Amino acid sequence: MPTVLLSRIEPGLEKSEEEHRREICTAGRWLYEQGFVPSADGNLSIRLSDDRILVTPAGVCKGRLEPEDLLTTDVNGRTLEGRGAPSTELKMHLLVYRLRADVKAVCHAHPPIATGYAAAGVALDKPLLAEVVVTLGTVPLAPFALPGSTELSAVLKPFIERHNAILMANHGVVSFGPDLLTAFRRMECVEHYARVSLVTELLGKQCLLSDGDVEKLLAVYPRPKD
Image 1 (cartoon, rainbow, N blue to C red):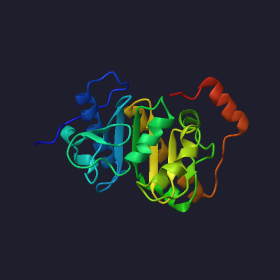
Image 2 (image 1 turned 90 degrees about the vertical axis):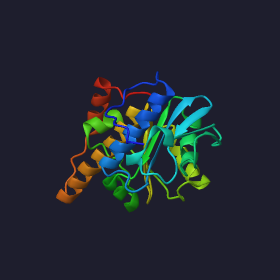
Image 3 (image 1 turned 120 degrees about the vertical axis):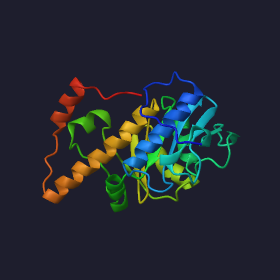
Image 4 (image 1 turned 90 degrees about the horizontal axis):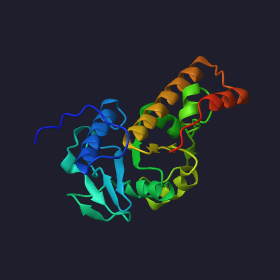
């Protein structure tokens, strides 16, 4: 079957399942083209309803997904529709949905600079960029746990309620939001934050925003709430 040509993702969730399927394929291609998900890395999901999750399959390149490749599962991870197996990281997605009723989409990828920080054991938690302060706040670092394991969910759990993106030590990044576009944009924002942070470290100087600067920013631009 020919590759589906898609170019955009609309905000919001008032869409048919077919539209959600097509948009996951678009997001997968965007992540792949930016080098965030080489090979068959990464995974994406959307909460279709209280008891149905649309998720990418295991072992498939996210840059070459077709709508029919996706699977639907229940909130316990049991496959309801689709061929093959859902992502091995599904437990992590389900945990986010369970803890955050406001979250409707989850994005996991391995953007190289942000993942470098995760591999170095360094959180992205300094007030370095005004836009990041407003959109993300801080990006904490969760300890290492085996990808796809119950232990990974356990180490992520303390961070999920207060953050919208998390570094996973020696692994990658997970971001989430009220729709797929927001989850994807937060992933991009984390990588941009990491790139700028790395440049400042190479230059040997970081001029951080003061507590007063942060307060002024949030007074004018309140951080979005999902």
